[in-house]
Image (cartoon, rainbow, N blue to C red):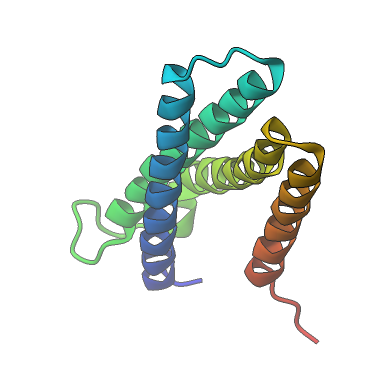
Length: 140
């Protein structure tokens, strides 16, 4: 892949990670100020915190890649190997963030009822599957 492609990919991932981290942080803040101290609410708080943290790590990893691959940047003669660590950390934290966000969605309905819990679990799993299907390309 070219450096221009990596730059554009970093920009798009940065945008998605920023939005999802903001959403996760909002959930964390709302759960922290709520009076509920149930086991399930605490699990949702933990998954939201993990999601927010992972998306924030992804944001800063993508900023690093973007800065390194921007034409006319500070560092000249950059290669793909020069941002290997940021790439691995960014992608892994993004994926963990997606898993934890989907888990948070799946758990959320169980605070209301069994029927709502089954529905949100289905939606959380379906969401995760569809995200990964759209992110994966199979060449025939």
